[in-house]
Every structure is written in C-alpha cells, then in structure tokens.
Length: 507
Image (cartoon, rainbow, N blue to C red):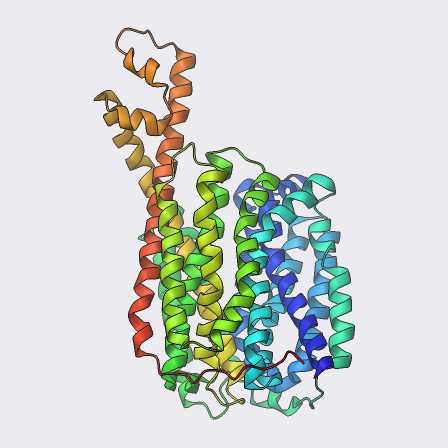
C-alpha cells in the first residue's frame, strides 16, 4: 500500500501541474503576446485553445481508462503533457503555440478526473478521505498560487519557463507512476467499439459552448454568432445524448445519473466551479485594474486563501470521518457563500486588509465544498462506473467555471457603464457618501462650486469615477456568485445518508 500511495502522489503532482499551467499562463499573456507578436484580439486564444481541448478530454476519461487502464492512461497523458509543454516553450509563432496548447489541453484534461477516479479505485473506504483531501488540496491550491508563480517566473526569467517548469515534475511523475501504480492489462479491443459520430458530437457540443461563453460578454448574448454557437451546441449535445442512450458501447456511461447522490454531487460541483473560478478571476481583475498591482503582488495577496485551505485540510479529514457528509457540505457552501458575499462590499480603496477575512473564510470553506460532495457523488458507485462518473463530475465543475466567468464578464461589461452614470449623477447632486466611496477628498468636494476644475483635475476625477464604477460592477458580480452558491443548499437535503467512514491509518 505504501508504493500505491507514492504512485498516487505522482498522479496528484501531474494534476497539480496541469491546473497550475492554466493560471500561470493567464497571468503572463501580455508577455507572451509581445514575444510572439500576437495581435491583441487573438491573445485570448492562448487560453481558449487549451480550455476547449481540456473540456473535451475530461468526459472521455472513462472510455480512455477502459481502453488503456488507469496506470497507462496517466503515464501516456503526463508524457504527452510534458512533451507538449516543451513544444509550447519552443514555439516561435502564434500558430505553433496554439497547436501545442490544444494537445497540451487534451492531455492535461484527462489528468484531473483520472486522479479522482484513483481515489475510489486504489484505496479502501477508510483511506479514501485522506486521498480525496490530498487531491482536493492540490486541485484548489493550484489556481490560488498560480498568479504568484506566474508573476515570479515572468519577472525573474522568461515566458518560456511558464511551460518548462512542467518538464522535471512530468518526467518524474511518469517514471514513478509507471513503476508503482497497480498493473492492469490494457483493453485495446475497446477501440473497436468507439462511436466516432458520438465523439464528434460531444466535441462539437463542448467546443461551441466554450466559444459561445467566450464571445457572449463582449458581443452580447443575443448576437448572431453567440446564438448560432449555442444553437449548434444544444443540437450537438441533444444528438449525443440520444445516440449514447441507444448505444451498446457508449463513450460515456450516463447510468451513474440514476444514483441520486451522484446527480446532486454534480450540481454541487457545478456551483462550486462558479464560485471557485469566479473568485480566482475577480480578485486579480480588481487588484490589477483598480488597485494597479502587478502579477507578483496580486499573487502574494491571494496566497491567503491557499494558506487557509492547507490549515483546514487535516481538520476536514477528521470531521468527514465523524459527521454526516450532507451537514458538512451544507456548512461548507454556507460558509463559502458568506466569504463570497463579504467581498461584495469593496471600495476602490480596498486592499490586502479588506480582502483578508473574506479570503480566509473562503479558504476554510472550500475543503468542505469539495471533499464531502466528492464522496457523495462517487463513494457509492460501482468501481466500473467510477471513471465515467469522475469525468462527468469534474466536467460539471469546469462547465460551472466557464459559465460563471461568462456571467461575471457580462455583469462587469454591462453594469460598469450604468454605475458610472449613477455615480456621476450622485456626485452632481452633492452626495458625500458617494464622494467618499469614489475617493474624492471631502475638502475638495465641499468647495466644488467655488473651485475652477482644470483639464488635469477633470481627467483625474474621471479616472476615480471609472474605478468606482468598475468596483461597483465587480461587487455586483461577487453578490451574484454568492447568491448562486446559497442556491446550492436547496438540493443538499435530498441527498441520501452516507455512513461515516471508519477512521484508518495512512498506510
């Protein structure tokens, strides 16, 4: 069992690198853009190409596990991820980089559900909580430390090292995992049962959905392109589901949705994705555009959440062995919603001190939003169902994040202008509270009718109003995802009771 734990730890390292890669690259896109002379309107494709490939790969993990075995799926995926990381670092053009990012995203996408499958395939019930904690801590820690890692690499070295940092961990993980993970034969005959039409349909459905969510905030949800993409996505997923339900060898087994706890777990995973990805997105937006912090400073501020996660993880394991998973889940989501809601009261002057406690609360809550729902979703399924179920469970979290980010951007784009008009009107009416929120010196505001405002002062005041409007719009987004997180509490009472896990030792 000791060697199994080492092999599983290598899987977790591979998963951590795949999740970290998304965030470190996101913080350094301007550097990559300048180095490869990428047009500004195409810069986002460096991330979008990866995310589309990743979201297509995640639900296919079950089929690939049956085809290659868990051990070889991980080894092949981590080797491919490592090689494509090297290809990204060696890219000399935009086209080369996008090609390697697509391959990197597909190989990285299988690593995440493979790890959560391994929790329930490799370990007995009394050790699954500890394994879930290890995987969960790394899964939620990666987006938190990503900004500081990306900022430090960009400031200290070159953008190439954003990808080169994957090489040594990737090689180590592949060698150790191939030697220590339990050996099981590959079933290559499964390839003969592959339904290529279903594969095309699911790929098209997820790719067009990701593209629609990317374009909707700027173009508008009712634009022709977005409606067309969403229509194609709905048509593709409808065709995929109909074909899958009739297939004798489906790519994805939807039978796990017959388990009520799995369905509820997927809903919770979707909502967690909205809050988790949304909070990791909103903080850098505020700190960069309102507070003018650089990537390294933003990363240092956001470390608070990661430290809180690490501190509570052992406590979460102990509590999950003794307390009803439904109660822990409800407390976790309620606490997480509180942490999100507290961030909805920021001002343009808010900085580390004002962000400290909301971050601490969210960090403490996240482990209870991840560990018990994972056991609710996957803990009662047959082992043959776990790979498919893990892919769907993790897909829901990623889709929640993608949809949440689209909604957040929509709120920011649409509400900023409205808040700007409202703030200007209140300032003209002499509202002191608004002047204080904006950051206008009250002595200057009190003498506004007698002081001549020159062009320089007018420009400075305009910047203050724009920052205040952006802050108010960001607050609206925080409030929205807090309310959505509260909404998840509705489904928890419908989950079936799970027996407490007997406590056990690590090895």
